[in-house]
Length: 148
Image 1 (cartoon, helix red, strand yellow):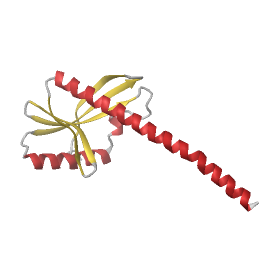
Image 2 (tube, rainbow, N blue to C red):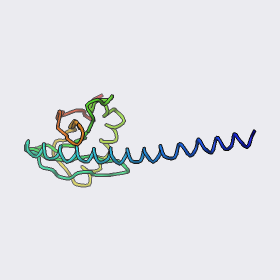
Image 3 (cartoon, one colour):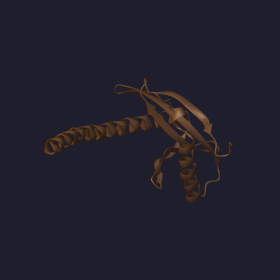
Image 4 (cartoon, rainbow, N blue to C red):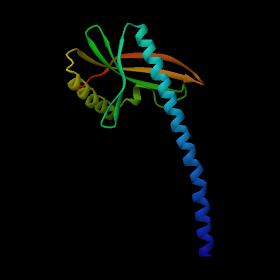
């Protein structure tokens, strides 16, 4: 009887493995969807007069999607690509923890590049339906490191 239980346990473990592979495919699909949203957001902001300085700036395993300039502002942008039926809104997904990560990466960028411009943090919300994406909203000054 004990031997039979072990076989059942082994069988249940085998059923978990394909699910993990499916999760990896989903993450890859989410990554592609996010990248498509970032490209669309950059194009949208360029049409609005922004200059793209860099994209996907990384520091300490963290990333800022887009860094742009407009007038006297250096703008750090978090792009959120969501399906229309997503349970969490794009702005709602940039919680305090995420904001702190963005501040730390932005501080590193500012220090490395001796930036003197005004700093702003924006969110661009991109909606994806099937293979099509559209910008839903550009939220200027979405959050501030100085708000308490």
